[in-house]
Figure 1 (cartoon, rainbow, N blue to C red):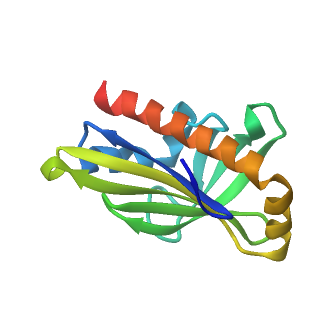
Figure 2 (cartoon, rainbow, N blue to C red; figure 1 turned 30 degrees about the horizontal axis):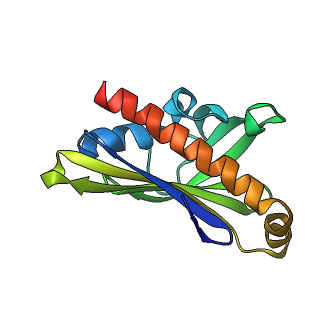
Figure 3 (cartoon, one colour; figure 1 turned 90 degrees about the vertical axis):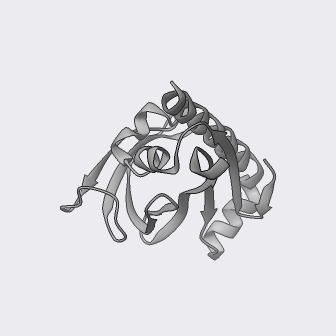
Length: 157
């Protein structure tokens, strides 16, 4: 998929599942390890138990599938049931935003799932993007496609 702006990209996939079924999957962060090539587990934190705006969780990441390995603290920034789930990765402040948009198709019997990322527009991240953006965008786009295809297999299987 093409870059939408210098620090954003997205991938969409149409699946034979309802928005409700897709929502249950994309908003359950504890299942991300089944799908993502980089985040192999996640857990709700600070008393959060499920998707809602302001909920917190942490993801266990193996960067580029090889390392380094670290826990990334996250906060849900948008949560609209069967429509939008977005969170920000926190590392001394907001760094990277990830999300899923759900669009009903064919009267709600199918769904277009769009996964996206958007880096915060800070001087440090602009320099990072200038130096490594094209490579990181390619990695993220490939990872998003893999994640969505794995979700599709579960939803349609």
